[in-house]
Length: 94
Image 1 (spheres, rainbow, N blue to C red):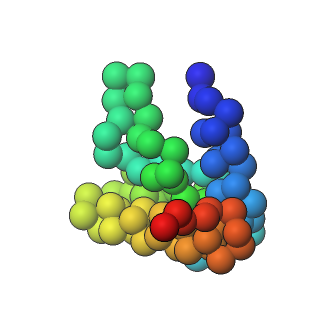
Image 2 (cartoon, rainbow, N blue to C red):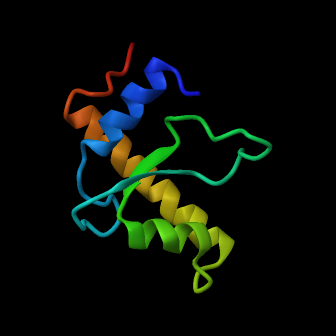
């Protein structure tokens, strides 16, 4: 079960509404695939809003190597963090 903090994070990421990779409207909050297993998910902040097509391509796309899939999800996560910061939903402490 996720915590209230995790639910707030997922809701903030979903607010982007468009895919962090292709810009398509309608997103799913996608986790990075590393660091999960045995009932564990990756940390909530390792997520990005992806359209169903980009999400499927990263999760199981046979046309991409594992390194290419990792690079794409990392790019999407960075774009999500940038958007959250620019929109005041992620505030960095000094």
